[in-house]
Image (tube, rainbow, N blue to C red):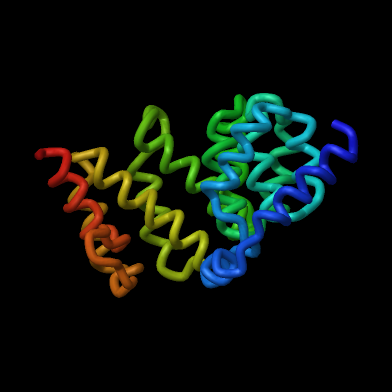
Length: 222
């Protein structure tokens, strides 16, 4: 798309800036002030425009990058392009949307999952673990769940925050989806005590893996 199109979209995003939304987002490590409902409405109006999405990403602006992921064609990104993007996505929301809205739909997802999980950058590694959690739930064949539990047991306790959170989600997902590994997953969670004291709002499920696993299994059983 032409540069004027990008400039016009950036102007629209600037007009949607809400200081209260920015204050809330900044408490979670994000650096944008656009209400996500309004962002989605803008994306719906723009529809799919992959080249515009690429240009919006290159601005480096978080709101523009979030919008880019709503108007792109996930399968159109090259593997190396996605690898570069995950290394540029340093705020939680941009990182999360890139993994969930784009990479999971990419034909390169499995190759990137394997590469990222072993990456020395913990934020990149957390993306690999997020993709692994998705496979645990949807396509566990060939993953080697006992081996995953070995890695989680050895490394999760001392992992940096973002990576620790992703590994903990994988631990919980194994316990929820695979009854034969449930007891071990709960035992690992209880011994490591990762996120045991995480503040949880009323009505929400604790991210502490043993509680998370028990609650989700209970819901599945009705």
